[in-house]
Image (cartoon, rainbow, N blue to C red):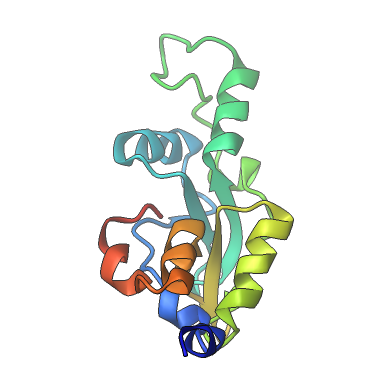
Length: 152
């Protein structure tokens, strides 16, 4: 019976709210500050209609910080003040819809080696699913019960 129930799970059953999102014009320095201060692993970059334009992961941010070298005295993060989220965001973002099978989304995360996937409805960002939340839901732990403290 558990196997049958898990087969019916949809992405919405592991959906977590997005704690943080930024616009493409947001200064990259602010994005890095947010990620470090709040312990966020990735931040979706959205447009005016909340459509997903890209995503910035901690790996993207770290690569940019290393690329720029040691922090200048003028910036705490070492990121030039003229760079924006658009500058380093990954533009090709895998997204899933709420009604997709959760097991299919889980396979996508594993096969593409991504930690989380934005969830969209009618082109707008409505949440995310993470590997941790998906595992809990598929294992029977109910992601929604544990999603409250999950990273964005």
